[in-house]
Length: 111
Image 1 (cartoon, helix red, strand yellow):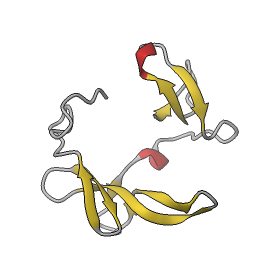
Image 2: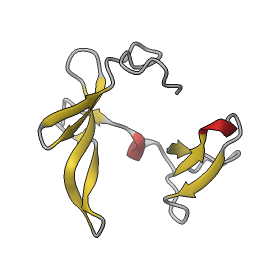
Image 3: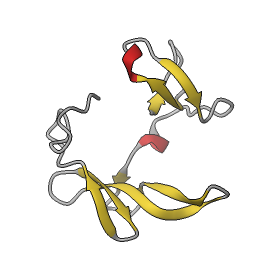
């Protein structure tokens, strides 16, 4: 799952595809077919230290309620950047720090 641009399109879509078909993606689901993104600003996990703005992912409260749920996923800029998933305030998972190539806690992740 992730953001992709089909073919030569400059539009970005969020979708799910089969990993086994790389380098050609077989996309099986797309979230925003009618409203593609035209820039990469909705695709960042970040914290702006000047304004305090933080961009993060949040789960839905339930299948019927898209308001923020219990889980969040964000980039922790303390020390070397790493992504952290929490349920409420309790840490559930972290990727390990970014070394410029991959996250140290998930060495087999292909970006």
